[in-house]
Amino acid sequence: MRSKKFKVKPDKAYKLLGTDLELDPQKIYTAVYAMNIPDWKERELIFIGPLPGFLLEKNEYTIIEQ
Image 1 (cartoon, rainbow, N blue to C red):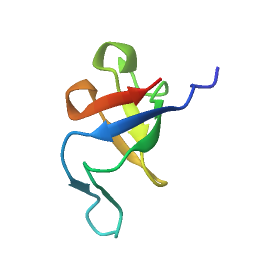
Image 2: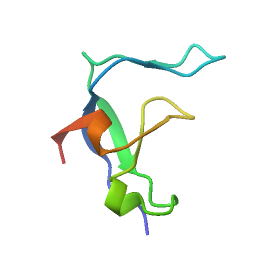
Image 3: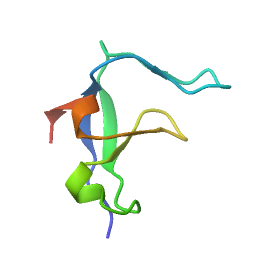
Image 4: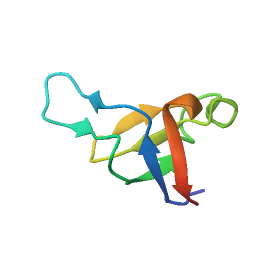
C-alpha cells in the first residue's frame, strides 16, 4: 500500500547533521506517512522534505493540505 502525499509545514527549523539538508518552518513541504515504521499511525509519523528526508511526529509539524 502506498501512502498518499500531502502538504505540511515543520513547526521549527531542522538540520540533518553532516549534510546540507534542512527544513525551514516558513516553507511548505510534501510529506508521506511513515508506514514502514512501527506505531506510525499512533505517533502520526511522516517523512518530509528532500531525500533522504526527515522523520517527524505529530507534534513537530502542521498539516496544510491533505
